[in-house]
Amino acid sequence: MIKFLVLVCLTMIVSGCTSITDDAQYKPITKHAGWFYGACLVINMPNLPKGTPVTLVDAEGTENRFRSEIIAPTKNPDKCLPLHEETSGGNNIGGNRFYLISKPEKGKFDTTFTYGIAVVLEKNNRALSISETLDLNNDGKIDLFSVCAASEGINFDIWSSTPYKSINLWNGYYYLGYGIESDCPER
Image (cartoon, rainbow, N blue to C red):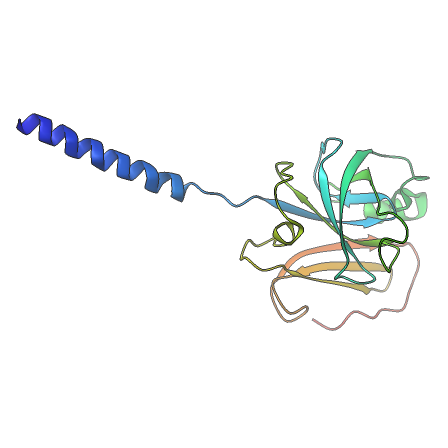
């Protein structure tokens, strides 16, 4: 009888531990940020298959968001301006990969979605909403986005809250190959 009670107690303890372990093993989905110009995505993420969802945040109005998807990898500067000879040296660094992406229909938004920030999920998970996708640090709130002109390119940033005053979660840079007037705030 004592052996039976010990066996029952051990079974209950192991069952309880299993459910605690399952909760402790929960891992948030990893998200990767990049930037886009036209129909070209620049991101440090190799081997993205066709159909991988991409969430775009428009630089002209960061409240404008659009669900896009990967069409194919590209090395063609005619289809991907960041690969042009004059700019590719500054953009083809740090493991950046280049992909063609789908774009929103004209007239669907007030802006043209010419350039901005892109977020890709690690596991091609279509179940997440746009707001969940745009929460890079998984704190339950959409992160904030900023885009500004630097001396020879465009800075793209994702912040945990107030831009330039909170934690910078990600930074990308589009090298243009020529000088422009900077409008980025001091950090």
